[in-house]
Length: 246
Image (cartoon, rainbow, N blue to C red; front, side, top):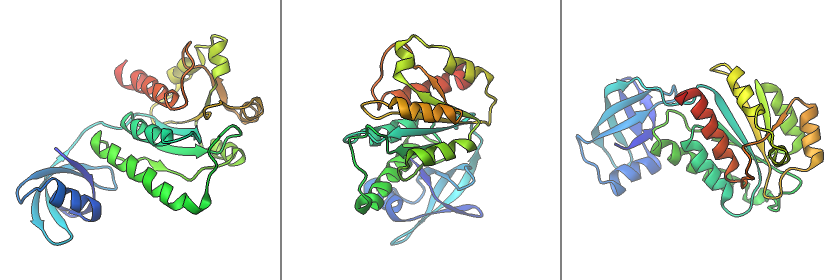
């Protein structure tokens, strides 16, 4: 059954704009058809379409659903701006795996240069990808995708997190395999994790040193060197395995 994030009033959800178009024009749903709806309080419900107007769909709550969908810990992915559509891939798949937030990072080795003139369109597209992936994976929350930040802002941002990690390939080359596992084992549910990933060329020693001075811990992600678009998915999978499957 399709899932949508929508405005909630009493026993009804009001669906508009692109989601209205998807239901009425693409899926061609009719009165009586059922969908899942999620409100801003991350409450989900099975709903029945009760009214279709020229620009709105009114769906009545049939049953509130009590389900555990979100990761027990909040994971923010900081990705060094990569080339092409790799960031879109990270956002889409990272959302499916439970990420709470995505923050692009203007790293020293980022080949892509951030164009402020195209910033608004980029952000709209990234957040749309996150929303669609959240609906597809039946999540209760749409991860936020922020504007790209620089190293100084990243250091300041880290002060708000319980655990700060750097996925650093040099640690993997040296065989480091315990920092991630040890930190996850000691982390309580409800806590927050901020993980930094470099662009295609990786993070520079200067960037890593500055982050380490601010309390970030470099860690390896297994013995193999992962691509910039693969590493965040590995990390999220490890978090899910530890907190949800063990």
